[in-house]
Image (cartoon, rainbow, N blue to C red; front, side, top):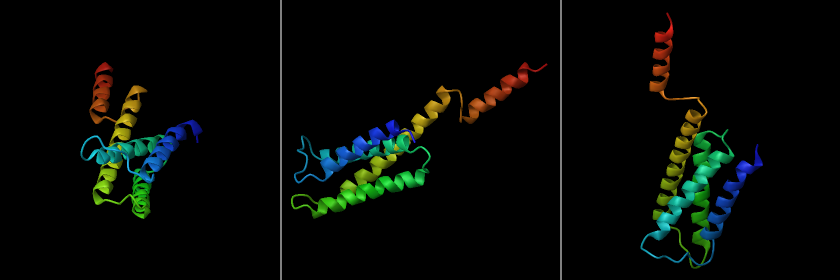
Length: 135
């Protein structure tokens, strides 16, 4: 495993743990700002998890991210000035799915960039070009 690939994941996980388990909630500028934090934080967690561990199946990566989200919500419920919220868990779940979608799109972009395509239309176009080039 390339340890430099795991560094962004460790940093994002540390930021989420620090902000999620601190005694006082993060101050809010607008309503439902914490939901935005949850969604973007877990999107970043899932994206960096897929970068750090590309050999993991999607099921396990999503499961690990959702388990971390659930454990943080349980940890918040044990703190005196914090409370767990189903809305926060929903935002975490949406963030995990957003992070998976972004990582999948980035992976497809990378494959196209290096010349390996997974696009069926592109494969058909290559076959048509090759068949028309043959005498």
